[in-house]
Length: 418
Image (cartoon, rainbow, N blue to C red):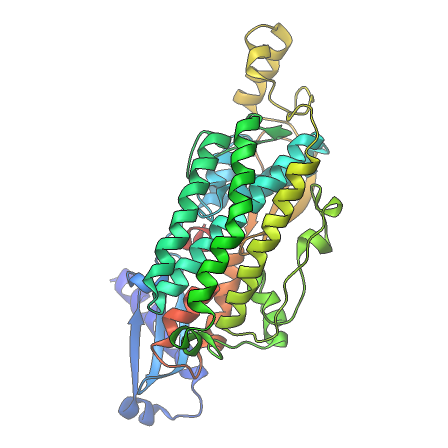
């Protein structure tokens, strides 16, 4: 009985939120003219288990309430029961389209807490894998947005390129999808010269394939009419809501953490931050297409400037020793045993560290009480923040535009729900 009462109360709150968004129509008019439509959480065009409660006047959206949480797995609470090292595989499952970027973001936060830094070669390799992850995520965006508005060919072409990337990831990390490649203080293993040559071949060929897709879309009347002027959000609204990533840069705000707060070796590399002013689905598409080209430039520079050396910092009691040393030296065996079983013991305090992930600012807040597990870990996920913009973007659009707007946001619900 209590559960039924709670469910009725929850539905009442959602309906009241819709009513508040549609104050220009009285409640009596709403009963006569408006319709409440559930989209999701199983709808194939919602890019995951996202539920939208939409109020329609005919085919025009007059209100929208996003409801999330269907994929909630409690990762922030799980972190309190994992050592800092054990939590690395969980980061793969956040934005599962860019696990290498998530891995890097998390270990950078832990390293900031510990006050250590990875060797130069590891930092260059982290930039390379982060930009490969950005390309992979944006290719998924490209294919899915095109398919949402009816262009199936681009979906096939984008996945052709992503399949090449998964071959690279397998050579780099030993896994195609859930990589768990980074380590606190470095990387799981170095990258072979043969794999670096494969990366070079891929990024040299990619701009031609991007242009191939653009030739199909940029002058396609159907694609332009389905995206141009659709899902518009102003610069002020975007800033107020904390909009982040390509969506914010499509509103004319050139904010990119790689420039605004450089990390790793981005300050030593030359690249531009694409900015458009439309604030619509088409502008968000343009930003991501240009960002893939900038990622290609960054990876090419990394391959040219890559220093030799180790990819693992020598920091006893803080960084896991190499396996060959664990098997042959007593000190390293003891350090490995203590770190694996009891965790690193960082200083007492709190830190926040963020990177420019493919979907925006991915941040980790860690509060340490000096024990081997974080006392509190909070994930600032861009997909969660960006979904706040849906009620503004959808107001006044047609029901058929809803799928294009969601596709232009490119949310991953594993990251939004955590």
